[in-house]
Length: 379
Image 1 (cartoon, one colour):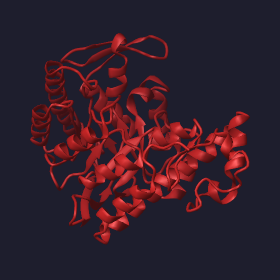
Image 2: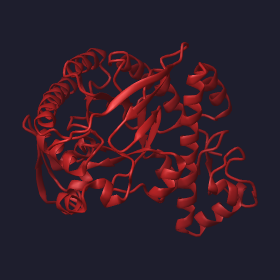
Image 3: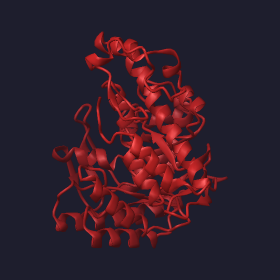
């Protein structure tokens, strides 16, 4: 491979009252202003919304999943299309998750070994074996802008012995992934994933071992897996402080305003989650005063927009009453309209966060936002 693209990360502003910062993440297919939320497009599509609509919103980085794409449609299909960007007709950045979490979730169908993992497809039961090297090569075929290595996830509440073993394997796999990434000159930024469950010493061990590898970026895995918000905030803060200031930091799997704000406060740059799109398909919409359940009878005659302060196409053109009607009659348009709104809401949130950091107002912005936003309330 020749002409390998050199990605970069440049901090542009830092908030003096917290660890929040803004930056430019320059990738082969996009320049991404951070903090940034990545919509999840597991199967080469973000559910219920066109990619061109995401582009018009200003979204420059989405997440897809190497495990799912490896199984279906398969690497040969994507390779013949010219890579994932061409296959899905998305001109901006793509981060691909390795599928480590998906393999973990198939506990009864997989066998974990130091060499790699054997598992049966959730689609047809066929047997597959993947090594860390395989996963890097798969993401090379995809043409990912950011690559996540194969790692070992552990469930909330597991014992320290199991969590320690997961850290050891994750570190070994990260070393092998880095070697494969270097030897094959794979484009894109390879991130390390810090594990350690909720054991501080294991978190420190994992972060220390991974930072020695001098990877282009670092992710914090194993958070937002069922723990209380206070525990999430404690471990997010502790782990972020262990990571290099000059490298991008990514907390995997968070997508609510409360968790995004908590992560940004600790210097996190990237986050992703299926939450805004999944909940849209279940009639839940973000508003500036909390989330609402559009199936509730109280919205039957409500001819106001989802959020009076929102300027998205859904809020400009449709009412709560109409969208409730669409959900009650099973119309696909309901999910499409609220998906667009929810993603617009989060994109507007991170844009406001970036502006607050640039003006050294993040702490007051966070406080004012949360004072208005009803934590976890469905009305």
